[in-house]
Length: 284
Image (cartoon, rainbow, N blue to C red; front, side, top):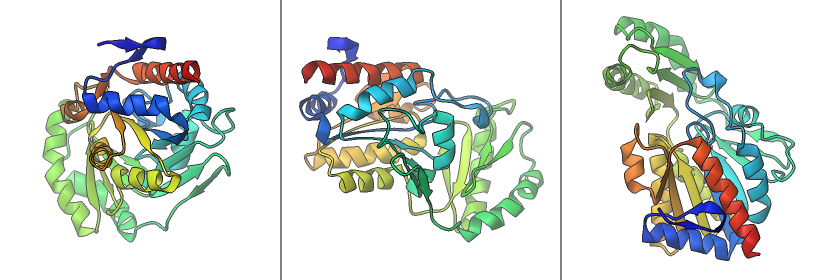
């Protein structure tokens, strides 16, 4: 892979190179959007122990003042992502936005407040039924439930065979979710049951329209990021340049296949963000 000044990696695709060039030409009209888990934070067996990479806040705070906006787009509750990311009260991140629950929630650094809709009634019903449901279908040992406030997630990473447990649970959980008016969002050894109507693609598209972005970089690592990738691809087809970055590729080859640039994980994402900040500064 070639490189630019400040060790900025070169995208492998023409569309990606066009997106990067557009951002470097007009950073103030560009948005950098990122997933949290697997992109800014390593995937860990216990999601409550996930924290942003040690260099993430410094890289973001160097980059954010130079671009139009930086947004974190995550399936986590917005407030949890803020805490685990260490984003609040950081110089340089005064205008950071966190779009949580796939965009259903929003935290703005400028106010420090989270805006969110009322809980979907199906989530409360699911919360009561899910433990017994998993027992009744003989869920694999090591499967466990994560409470996410406006959603629930069933993890299989601790199971003896995580992939087999994931495959065995997917169809039953999709049926259960449908009975409660919910949908299943598959991820890396996790099946999240959540309200329909919002995904990372919708959230990203709406936010880009709100701020009038003329270029976008999006980085993600999981199946939930495919919707955001599709949104960027649609924008590119309409003449808005964009760059798609995949953080790691081993577990989610579908994402890597559509990326313009693939990096090995959060450490390299942070390196990319820092290099991008340096390249913008050098060009100004």
